[in-house]
Length: 374
Image (tube, rainbow, N blue to C red; front, top):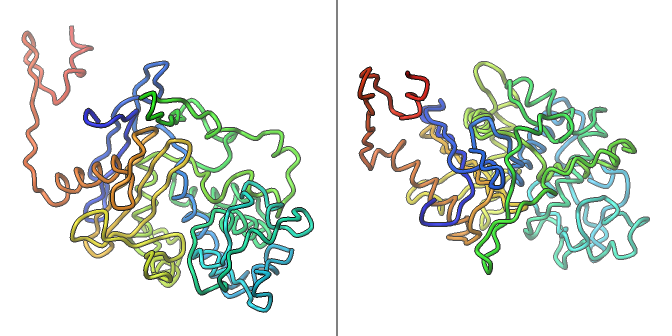
């Protein structure tokens, strides 16, 4: 953090399937000079997609839908690449970004791809046949959120709360007004030319008026199933452990082993992408890691685990330098490797300095412990 511009970092390390370390560094809010703490909530961006995919797997297990279903039938209007009108675009294709869709018309409303709402709907499709190519597309997951509503009968944010967060005893969600906004870590975007950070209030825009006029099964992008989850780093680590353990955490099964395996199986080998979960050997040298990244409004996040060795790392920054290395934000990649080297690989010896109070001989790892000592 001294080497590179960073507002704050919140981290969690999992070893042998258990959280062994959490800590937060830097600021929650620059203007108020408030420190970042472990209970701070972040909009984690695209890691949110895995919550949507997990919800779909639950509905598939209940036979309410199939990953091979025509997404047109699930969403409620025609979704076909005009260059390949006979090729069905399946739910699995959308979940793995192999649908041939793109975000050129935006993704904050389903109007973008609805032929009755947008005269340029055809621009939402690439030139290759669905199922034959890969392009990361946020619109895919905002449609998937809509499908969750239609097939569950619950509003998207409530479904995720009731079927994933609550069973795991996690605090978070997609609806800003349902959360304690005093816990939100302000997100900042870095201006490289001015060498300064600027707050991004849109990251936590409540969209209260839009929610008042909500249409079930269509207004879902308001909650951003593609990127709108708000959660702390330690709670995200618990969710990560569930996926590491093939859908189970402390005796509570969220999805079946088969569903977890499907999510973690690469469908686009070059990109390493499965169903809202990817595999990479570019994050930690010599390790194939499973998880997802996120970036939006200046925030950068990473949630990656190794299911065989049962370790994992969560890193969230509410603002840092935007440079990339090997496809990852450089600050996030360096932080992941620092945590791996010290807590998992044991490459570096860690010296803990014990501070002793001069008069009462109290000993602690932190001088802050002495503040209440007379």
